[in-house]
Length: 150
Image (cartoon, rainbow, N blue to C red; front, side, top):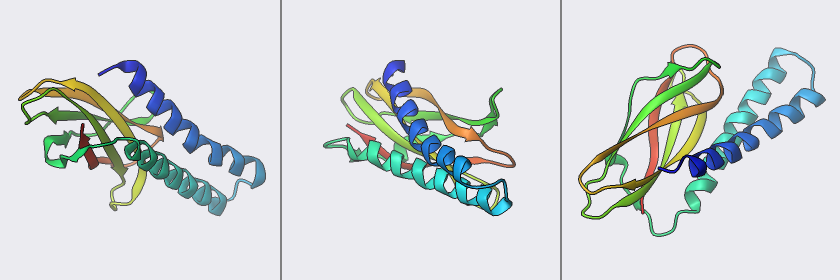
């Protein structure tokens, strides 16, 4: 996996998430309903950004069963972090685009990201890390959404 490509995708996704939140902060007060509205906009933006990244993959095969998410922890910045394992079951080296969704204790979607795992050799596993775009609190789980091998 090239760190530069992953950072680029994460940075683009982060920009998509922060833009509506920043706009909401300057236009609305600090009421609870405004905070909920901004959070909802951030989740919608992250989801749309993830979908846009996946749509760029041409000729990908859906291989959700080849990707597993581990237990979520929190990094020093309060962001949710989940270990991801990709197992290439094919006969060829492959790249993967993996959508990871973060959910709260009620199962509600609270964030989404896409990571790219490059050059996974045949019949081997590769490790990656998915990070939320913002601080998430409470019990958070990571789930694999779409996983494309290409």
